[in-house]
Length: 259
Image (tube, rainbow, N blue to C red; front, side, top):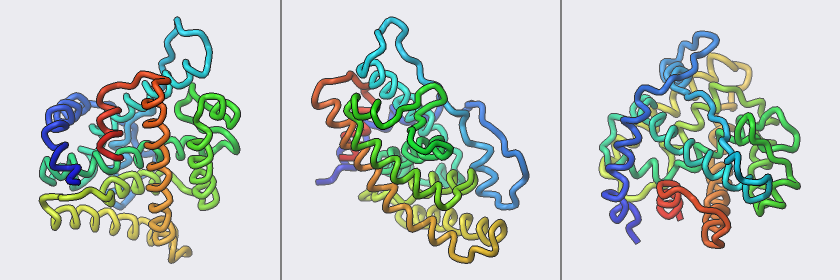
């Protein structure tokens, strides 16, 4: 089935609007200069983290947790669409190919956000500064499979000592290396991918010269990231199918495009 052909027109106006909406987003800045221009741009373009916005009139419950989480992820999705425009080389792709990469790799970038924020915890998932869930809370909310998958990936990166420059590059690579079908400009997409690969290799060579294989080890985590993202998509699709929690239209459409 040609997923992308059916989805191109559906998302064009919506994503264009989101790109325009977040063009003037306020971004954080790196604490020290990085020689690598690609990674320097990723550091400058990284949006400030969002906070959960729980409904003050909804009583504390598993439902309130799910409502807060789904609302947060929808807002992060919108920010992510704007962020992608600032990845060096992304805006040079055709609009169709930008849509294809976004629809295919969006959840991987959101997963990496959660994993990065959770690096300092041994047993929690930090979806936002004010939304941290432990295993028992995730189990009660029907998110235990998601908890297990995210904690496994988090532990993997904790063991590797992942830093900010690396996680931002992996986020961009997750989008570039997505399994999008029927891209129009395959050569342009390949150049986009190659530039990010070269940026990671250059960064590791200059910053960690004693770890000759670190870039390769990081690249080898991308299949696990994709697997984790697929589990996240299935989890939220199941919540929607069960009718447990309402979800925003864009979030649902992106879920449908990924399945």
